[in-house]
Image 1: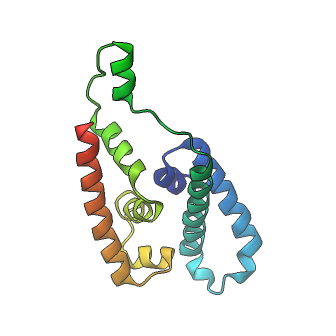
Image 2: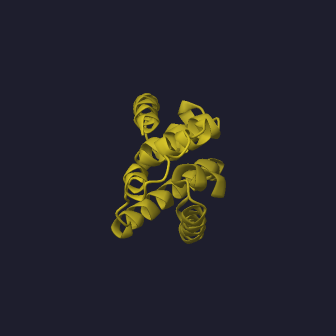
Amino acid sequence: MYRLAIAILGDEADATDAAQNALVAAWRDIRGLRDPERFDAWLQRTVVNAARQVMRSNRRRRAREVPASTLVALSGTPAPTPRDDAALLDAALATLPVDQRAVLVLHHLEHRGLGEIGAILGIPVGTAKSRLFAARRALGAAIASEARR
């Protein structure tokens, strides 16, 4: 649960909050689980929903960020060195909406098939496939945008 939450949110504190919220929600709603064989998908959907809640609450209290390039220009210090690939990917992922991050994480990090992704997110397989396609395109655009910074 924590691994999925941190892959979606990218922040340890937020991932801990989301995992804890998901555990509480799962404990509270376990009687609503109709098919015990689908427990894994049900629990992961709970984690994805908890991650969405954490992101929504963070949007409300997020501080305005000043770009590093502005700070460098004002301070007169030399520009930082280019970021490595992992940092570039993390920054690009952070710009994507939680739904796109979730489908990318489930497919590429959790190695889930489209059927499982559909079950976890509560969507048809065709929708999971199209969301994965759109998320990959959005990630490519975000990486290109981050690389220009």
